[in-house]
Length: 196
Image (cartoon, rainbow, N blue to C red):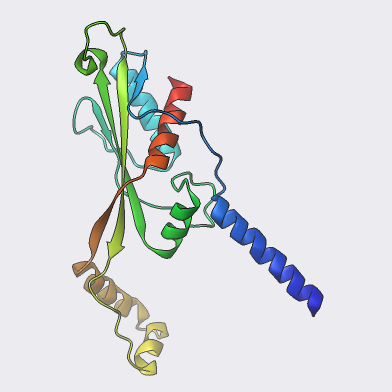
């Protein structure tokens, strides 16, 4: 009995360590916006889209603006999805495991001429990454006041009931803005710096 408890304790410690470590490695600090010597924004756009797609973001095509890359919102990784690099800190892993969090990336590419404050900049571009986080907020609670109502979810009518529940919940669903995610912004810029 003691041995089984010890094995269970070790297992939960390992799972907890993996959850709080996020299965991620640290990256060197990168300034945002980052200056690159490459001046061709089409080549930069290709590398930006490639990095974002490797991170499981869906890049919007065609682009909204010439010097900008947008992604669709992506629901954040949970603690057991350690292969997904979109949650960079232990706090992000815990938060996205407890709440429905989504992230959206916008990358701005500014040619050196437009970014110049003094006229002596060499050719190149500035890349700025903006990652916004949002949390899903529902307008009410699911009403399962009796065991009969709760049991009916598991009957043959469950598919029809879940469809009506989804429709009811989506009416009051609101995505609350949680601000920017500097850790993910820095990670994306570090990946881009390796390629450019």
